[in-house]
Length: 119
Image (cartoon, rainbow, N blue to C red; front, side, top):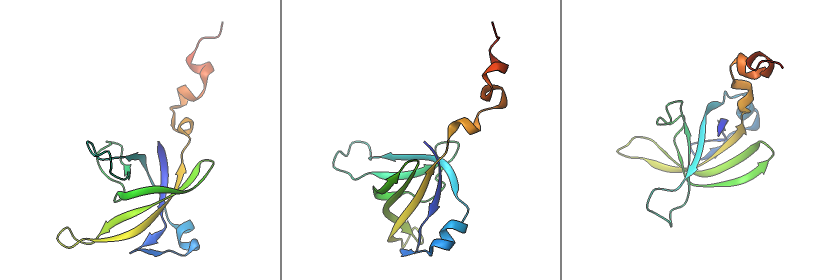
C-alpha cells in the first residue's frame, strides 16, 4: 500500500511530538511480510521505493501494529543502526499514513467523463 511514513524514534529514544510532526515523511510502498520458508518468523515491515527493491527506510524486524485508526497506524519493531561491521539493534516506531491512490492518477483517469464517451 502507498504510504507516508515518519520515524518516531532516534537511536531507540522517542522523539518529541513536535519534531515528529515537523519531519518530512518518506513515501513508498509499505509491505509487511515473513521471510520465505520460515513459518515461525516474526513479520518484517519495509517501505520500498518505486522500483519495489530499494528501502526508503531501514526495515523493521519483528514488526507489529501498535495502534490503528482509520488510515493511520503506528508500527513498532527492531531496526539495525550503525555500520555493517558493528550494527546495533534499537527499537523503532513508524507513524504510517496511508495515501489515497486516487490522488495520484493521471488527470485523464481522475475525470471519467474525459476518458469514456458519453452516450
